[in-house]
Length: 80
Image (cartoon, rainbow, N blue to C red; front, side, top):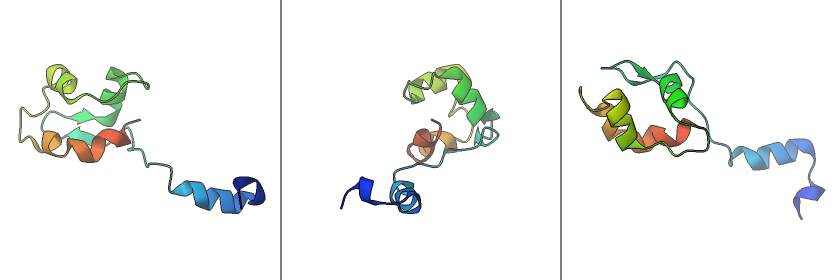
């Protein structure tokens, strides 16, 4: 069976696992310095990887409690 044999509903279920959930713009990545997902999206182009070192320089991520830096691997792929 290939994708041509499936109806729209079946295709939707099949592809649901391929999609990643993106974070809302208003989610704070760094609560100490009030850096939001929207701030990070404005800083990077959609075709760029989210780079922690660039974020540290631009927004001083990690200057407070550092939980944003420690959890980087959990949220970096949910920006774009």
